Length: 350
Image (cartoon, helix red, strand yellow):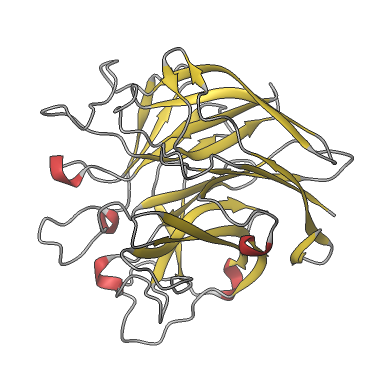
């Protein structure tokens, strides 16, 4: 099955297949699930997958394993170990039930191509005074330093500006070679207007940072509307980004739609953007009022049209090259529920 339009002049994607790992996978006492970020290490052949479990089922962690697939089928996921995320003093992060301490809400994980250490994002813990963050760590989960987040992305206690809780640092990707780091907000800042509704999509920000976290460029990105009318809650936002080359990005959008019974269905779409189509908005306080040249986006994959439909895809990474062709892998966050699959989907360039 051919999916979507070409990426550039010659690259398009073909579905290889999917697998739904069993719900009882457990490594070292830590249940596998909640996968919200992932990356592939071509030096070792390992996949690194970070969970958004807030230390409630086990200490906040990432998993290391192997994903077995070829150009014809996805065969198996084999987990080898889990690694707790560490704070500067070596301790793990607090759980929801803890009286104090930061509850990590991990959403993205990337291997730094310059150093081979790891960068991960947390959406923050506003109730306890912790802003969204980018952090470095080694392969053992040990803290390696903070990357300063741009000030507008912090929480404002008055809720009149800044980041919205649980709608912050959802997508991270390094440019080839690691000179730049791309950072995507899941949803608009308060001052940038409303979040997506069924009638209209909101406008969020995609930023280019240098290696110290300094803001060097920023672009406005129009989100889709919520893809179906919810009986209860519904949303649509960026769930991951991935650099294609120095100026093009894949942007994964995800709608969550809650039924009257409290069950969520998800509608995901993958877009290609070229930052040359938008204006650099560094220094712009808000994205309402004055004219704005928003990034043009081109649909690559509508996951509703795939066999089995969409899952809650939140992680996306380039995998191994097969026969000279790139592979793209997506992981679903099952929210540790029985009703949502922790699906892994593989596509190959064609």
